Image (cartoon, rainbow, N blue to C red; front, side, top):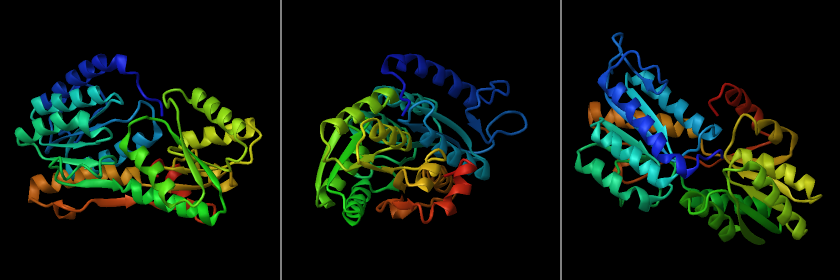
Length: 331
């Protein structure tokens, strides 16, 4: 994950603030590329919805989330603004800014719920409906969100652990590229709970893919009993394939999440399977749900149950059915 450095958070927030002001004021000459659903005069033609995530800049996963959100916004006539910051303080600042701008709805990820709690409360106090997506399945209800769209990472992790047993693995290395991210921790905990073999976590700096490759290579070289690497993102899975080769390890690679770049690795068997949580669908449903709530008072999941978008296992046997959508940039 090409995660932005926290030191640049204030600069990104300032740029985002200027962008939101232009979008919500209906300025036709903004040219930011961060707006959807504007009328011929350049002003918003429908509800103003903000999508605030913890995604890193240039990360293919979050590009899919955004594409789904943009598709829903285009269908619904929504004026959509998108911003992300991997630094939780920066993400909270982005959310507070759209609250001050009085948007009509906010979709937000809760990778680090404690850091986002006050910003979410401020949105609710302002009467702005908020839904969650991707991260925070264990906290969205207690935070008072209207709904949640994503994968139950604990369930997904246990499913991966069961698959590893079926594959005859005995020692798994679960690579966590962002310490403290509740979704990643839940995945690896789920693997450990269901897997009959040994499972350990390796914490790496996901902002530096070369450093990730080096760390995984070193660990595989230290312990030849590791026979499975569990990655938590498509780019990290591809890095792990290189690491296993560099370390001359017998370890195989499986991963959470899918991308078009990963599809050939699944087709060739370099990656044994990928767990697809359908990020495009997460973005789409989050925006569509806010539009439905604003226009018709609807809630998905009854406000009590999350709407699950995964896990779906993509293997060498079924990857062809996914490949054409991945090639189009929507899976």
